[in-house]
Image: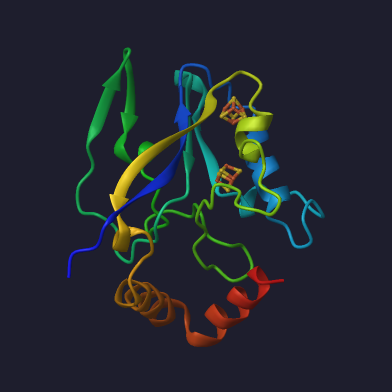
Length: 182
Ligand code: SF4
Ligand code: SF4
């Protein structure tokens, strides 16, 4: 049976790489916000945003953690933007086996940006609030989506959990998930 349409708020963070100075305030704010208890520690290794930096070439690319990738990709594209060369990895949000980004330091489990969902809600995500040069800006817009496209299906969640358990073991996954619930 076909579902109806619902209006969903789409949250977006726009990145202007030309404004990023590599100050890494976004990494610190994100890790503090997600510390348990909140703001009890600052550890950029726990941040869900990482600034890829090549100071010699004046390249700074903030990327937010996306979905976990079980395998690394085979190819790499290179991008030329305004005379600077960027590797495809600089823009990729995946927590993947080919690099150390977006892995929880204690458990090694993948981290993912949750747009700082919290109660009460923040006016803007933490990384945007602390980005004084204005490289990160926040926008919300409404979009009509299928009623049943709102949540991942049970099958999708099981596939995601299954691949994590296969790689990290049931014990580590359960321990880390119970930490997030505190
Ligand atoms: S806070 Fe803004 S300017 Fe500083 S590193 Fe992060 S994105 Fe770049
Ligand atoms: S939106 Fe929140 S969770 Fe996502 S990278 Fe920014 S501070 Fe971290």
